[in-house]
Structures are given as C-alpha cells and as structure tokens.
Length: 43
Image 1 (cartoon, rainbow, N blue to C red):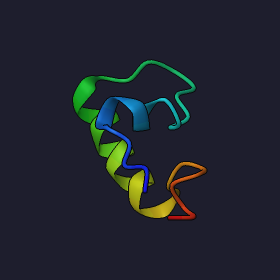
Image 2: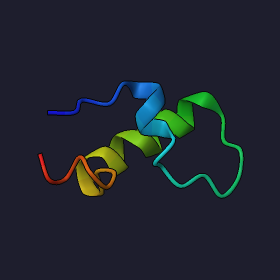
Image 3: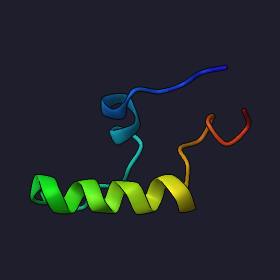
Image 4: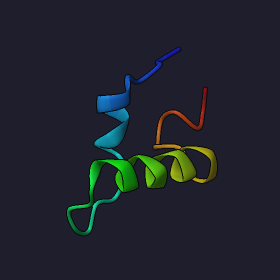
C-alpha cells in the first residue's frame, strides 16, 4: 500500500490561489476526507 506523506498529498490538492498555511491546512483536511488523491482511493 502507498501511504503519501503530507507534502506529497498536498501535490494532489487543487490550489487555484495561494492560501495562508492555516487555511490551506483546513482545506486539505476537508479534501482528504471528501476527495482523496487518485491512486489513494484504490487502496
């Protein structure tokens, strides 16, 4: 099984514009539960 690190996972998260670290982390948490990156969904 492939377990991406936090930095690797962030590469899959859409980032249309720069966000503050705190806000970006919050968005990442939401996406990690609702839309896992491709490849991770098939574990």
